[in-house]
Length: 274
Length: 274
Image 1 (tube, rainbow over the protein chains, first blue to last red):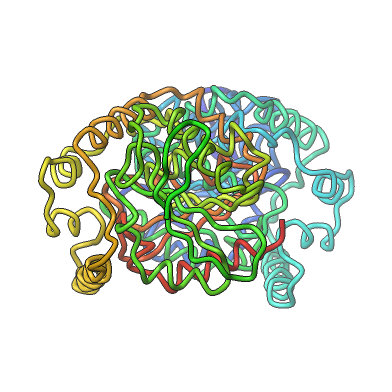
Image 2: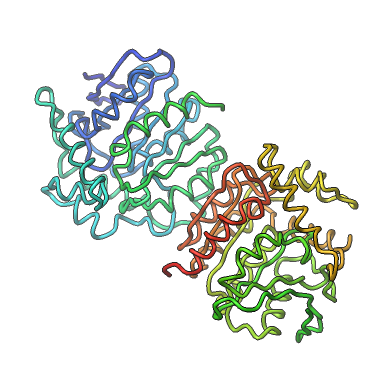
C-alpha cells in the first residue's frame, strides 16, 4: 500500500491490520533492506495479537524521495510516515540501522513511542561502532550481494543456524507478486554514511539514551558480527528501564532464526508492566 | 594469619594455600564485612583448584590502621597487601565495595591483575549509584545489624533464597575459634563516605573502565536491591572484554546462594581463553 506524507514522500508500506486493536507495532528495517526483507514467519508470529506495519523509509525500495545520510533525517522521515498513517502513538521495533532510527524517534518525539524494541542495536557514540567490520561490509556492502554473503552475517556457522537461514531466505523469496522495488546503490551509500557518522566515537553521547523513559526491550544474537552483543549490554545499562535478552547460536538475523520465541518475547514485553 | 606491609599496616588474612599453584585468587570484601563474612561454602568450592586468599583491608576487622574514606586509598592499601604477600600477579574477585576497589587496583596497577571478577558491581560515576537505597542502608547501615536485615539485602523473599540465606549464615557463624575482630562504626562511616563519593553521578567517568584490558567476569543476582543488575550490564557494555552472568532468584549475596555454580563459573572464567 502507499500513503502520501506532508514531506512530499509517498511511502510504500504493508499493514496486517486486525490484531487486538490499540497501538500498532511499526517495524524499522535494516541496512539495504526493503519490505521483502522482513521474514514472513516473524510478521505472521506477531500479527495475530497486533496490527503490524512495515514500511520503506524515504528513498528506500518502493518509497519515493531520497535516502538521507543521517540518522536524524531518517527519524524525521519516519515521523512523517507515522503522522501520515494517523498514528498518535506506536510501539516501535527497530532492527539494526532501523534501531538507530527508532532511538532517535523516541528521543525527538517521545510522546509518540509507547514502547521500544531495539534489535541488534547500539547507542550513538560507542567506541568500536565506526562502521561495520571489514568482513561484514565486505559481505553485505558490495554492489551485488549474494545469499551466501547474507547468511554469513545474519546467521552463524552452525548447521542449525544455517538451516534456519536457508528457511528464512526461502520464505522471503516465496512471494512472487507485489514484490517491493529493490534498494538502490544510492540508498546503500547514504545509509552507510549515516551508520559511520552515527558510529563516530563520542563517549559523552552515550548519555543520550538515559533520556529514554519508556520501557525498552534490547535483543540480539550471541554471535552477531555486525553489531556485537556487547552493545546490547551497554544499551541495557544506559537506558533506565530496559530488559535484555541475548539469543543463543544466532547472529544479526536472530529475530528471524528465533522468530517464534522472539515474537512471544515481544508480545510479553508489549503487554508487560510499565 | 598476619602480614606487615610497607605502609605500616598489619593485615589479617586467611590463605587456603595449595590449589594448582600459579596465580592466587584474592578476594575483596563487601561493606562492613570481615574475614568471617565470606561464606565458607564459597571458599571451599574455590579452594581445590586455586590458592584463595581473603584479607581485611586497612582499618577493617583484624587489620591495623585506619579505614580510608575513598576507594582510591582503599586500592592503595590493597596493593600494599598484595605486595607484602609477594604476589607479582593475582586474580581478583571483588564483591560490592570490594569490586570498586578491585576496579581501581586494575586501573592503577594493571600489570598485577591477571583476571578480574566483579560481583555485585557498578562503574564509577553511574547515575543512580549515589548511596544505597533508603531501605538498604536502613537495613544494613545501622549501628546494630541483625540477621533478618542481612537476609533482606543479601537474599530474596522467595522460600528457596531465604533458606539459602539461613544456611549461609549458619556456615559463617559455625566458626567458634579464631574469629575475626568485628568491623567498627568508624569503618562503616568511612566505607559509606567512599561509596557515596564513588557514586556521585559523572557520566564521563564511565569511560574509565574501557581501559580494563584484561578479561573480566561481571556477575550479580537478578534481584539485588543494593547494586541493581542494571549496572552489571553497564559494566559489561563498557569493558572491552567482559562476560556477564545474572543469577536467578538472587540478591546481593548471589555468590553465597549459588556458591557451587558461581565457583564453577569462576574456575571456568579463570581457566578460559584470554
